[in-house]
Image (cartoon, rainbow, N blue to C red):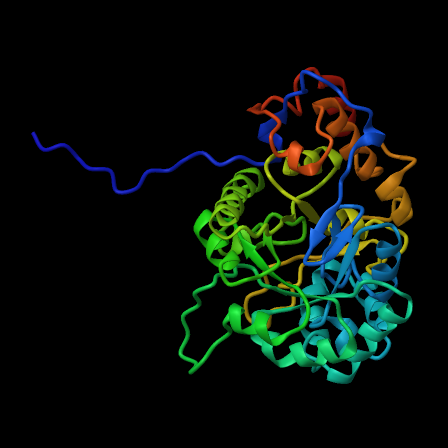
Length: 382
């Protein structure tokens, strides 16, 4: 009898709700923890980045986040670089019925990017003594690099739904990250990826940071439309292994930033335990009073002219950015005082640094969010 051979084997991948962090044998005062994140020569007191999405980051948000110790990334292919008065456009997006929003987005984002606005936005952030991080897609990375450098941008982020170091196209000479890195005077952060191999190859091009995550964002529908993605805990663990391997082979440490899918401080703690050096937040920061989305959040693939892969969601406005970052919390869902949650978790685990947090034990725990919580679940359902 001929034994049938397996065509493909699958491994289990884990998201935030399927794992838990094991407390340490020794504990530490939370205020003794060091949660710094480093990108190139820049050191951030808080390992939190605000996403390069139009409902999350504008010039005001970038300045405010910088003052609080984190980093907000300005999208140079959104309304900030297409319209002189983006606030008017953002108000239209917030005020449009859901049934009409995709068509409106497609119309709004059909407006050409204006290169003079790129420089203006960067200079507005720099004039306020902020660290200016800007984001572009791979298509425009080479075109806008010089403009951003001349305007004084500090960190250059090249991001798309999926990014690899080996992109095959019919163009004569496409984007090569090692060449781009050598052509700009600022750290280059790239993303997004979810696998060991892709992450390692990106690091080998000389980049200063890698964004981890495909499709987990609250406003992203790539996992539904395209069927791609890896749950964030597994993606982070795999890419952390690539980071450590690259450190062994090169002597250079490249931080990984887990991007998307966060709902609360517990998710941030789990990402750090899985190996992240920092996190990038969208919907949580979109809830801030300072957020330009006016209580709404949407993915940057939403306005795609032929294949929209995002949706506008209403996140509401829950408090100031400072309250979301540092408290005091006025909600019980863990979406405020994120820094306090991270420091407290590190203290419980006896981890004084993020690097030590990488070493704490985690367990597979699918019942972690429901065990003993019947009353909470019933009240949420009501």
